Image 1 (spheres, rainbow, N blue to C red):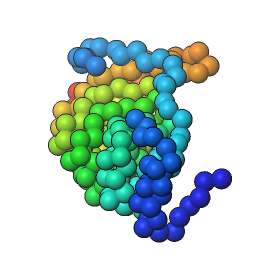
Image 2 (image 1 turned 30 degrees about the horizontal axis):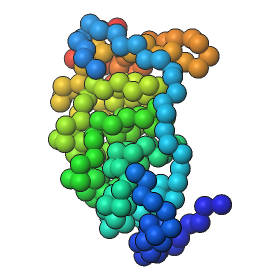
Image 3 (image 1 turned 180 degrees about the vertical axis):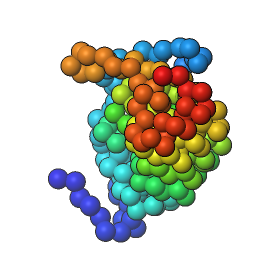
Length: 213
């Protein structure tokens, strides 16, 4: 059973003990293109004590422990199976200060995982414009396609987040980028910002921007 610690002050001690006991663990497109996405599994390392500590540090907004883990050999872009990279997890939990810090420490804003998408897609799903702006300014690819997660714009449109849709479009996201998704049952479907629009407001906005049906 995973132990949940009430205070992050114990985390540096656990890191030290772990270090003593073990060795360190060490898409081009255009507006006419259709990107094919298949449902293959992506390899990810199994959870280990450092992964658990990283999850706790992010949960408690503990930047010092995050830095200590990275300095002890944990890759800043490592995928924690079932949770994503540290940056993706911080975005999912709306940890704005940690997101900024991880980017400054060298986190790849475009790193993606099979289960968790990428950071921008998660910001779009959360409808967190502040995080989306931070990621965009740090070089996030607005049109990055991730297996089972489409693009940030398609995600925002399907979720009904009008402000996020307008932010992405105004900053250059491709409103005609279509994704062919092969699902687990073998069926396929085509997704685009307009054919997945959840609200009439989003649909009308995309039409006004000349999105193709």
